[in-house]
Every structure is written in C-alpha cells, then in structure tokens.
Image (cartoon, rainbow, N blue to C red; front, side):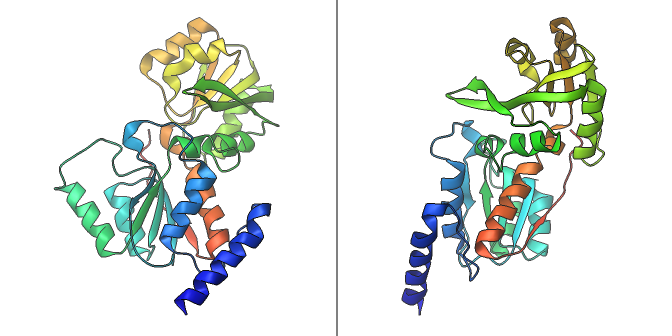
Length: 278
C-alpha cells in the first residue's frame, strides 16, 4: 500500500508540475510539504540573517492534519497550535531568532510542548518577505491598492521591497494602511509632500534604511518600525514614513503560505494571532 501511494504521489507531481499546480488532496507528509515550500520560496537562493535558519526547524513524522500559521515561534503560539490539534506550524520568525540559547526554562518548555504534540515548525523570513505573490511586501502592497508594484532596494543580490504609485494623499494612504492592518495603530511622519506619490513597501523593521530609501526616489515609505532617529531623519530628508508596526505588517505572508499549502495538501489551516504591539 505504501509503495502504491508513493507511485501515485509521483505520478500526480509529474503530471501537474509543468503547470505549477500541485493539489494533493489525499494527504502530504510534513517532509514533502517542507520540500515543496523550500522550492516555492527559493530558500537556497534568497539570502537572510544567520539566526533565521529558514526551513523545517523542528521535524515531526506523518501526514499533515492541520496547519497553524503565526508570526513568531514563541511559547504561547506553540502551546496554542498544539491545543488546536495542528501538527505543522508555519512562522516568519523562527525558533532561533534570538540566537543560540541553553535549552532550559521557556526554551525547554517550548520544545517539549511541540515534541509532545508532534508539532513540526517551519520558518521562512526574508524568502517570505520578498516572494512575488505570497510575500509580506506583495500582499501589503496589494492591500494598499498599489497597482503593479516593482521590486526595489537592492540587498545582498536581491530586491528587498516593492514600490509603486499611490493615487491619493499621504493621509489617504495612512487610512488605507490602517484598514489593511485591521485597525491597528499607524504612525505617520509627514516629512514629505501631502501627495503619497511613489510609495515604497518593506515590511518589518526597515525604518533604519530611511536615507537609502529616500535615495531610491521614494516619496512615502511604508514599513513596520524604525529607530527613534528615523523619524527626524525622514523630516530632514523630505520623505513621508508610515510605521504600521513590525508584527502587524508581517501577518500577511504566513497566512498566504498556509492558504497556499492547504490548497495543495487538503489540510485545514488557521492563523494564531499573538500581537506584540510593536
């Protein structure tokens, strides 16, 4: 039976791979899902920070039953994913984001909770930020109504953000961003003109790059957060900046990835909201 199922999987993959459509509604193992996501997100080609450790960070056996998605692989999220019956957790900031730590206290409890529940953890950071359709930047730009955004802001051989023109004022853009983020706090630095103009989108904590962003011809920069000095720097540079919150601007990618994987493996998915307010 196992051999037959394997042959069926391979046949379906060969038949559908040329179209880019893979719909394995009878089940998919966690290892298979990880390989599929690795390829779609181009983990081998997209650079990242060393603590990201993109990919399958905690393995678990068997087929996917239920998918959970969250921004951070923190202890409360792992506990809620286990309680929900998920056996695959997709996150943006993985288990080792704070660097190597002794496996004790919260680290031990988190690992034990996941292992006891048979919960695998898969993380994708910058590869999920920059993906052209599933990425945080792409989904936020679409939610803002920016038509046909183009990649910009080179970083380590890739473009880290998207830019395009917004037909409205900076206040209109702030209101649209607020709605896209579910009403969460949006802080505007009105350092430039009243028109939003050319808008650059880099989710997360890209505020420190405000000078380089201004140098790219951006009129209004949309990001998650930045250091205190980025506000006054933006004023001096003559650029508007919208700070939407690091967490809030990075909820888009994990939701999109979970939905994408669910369509291919047939397992249900849910988003675990654990906002930091930052």
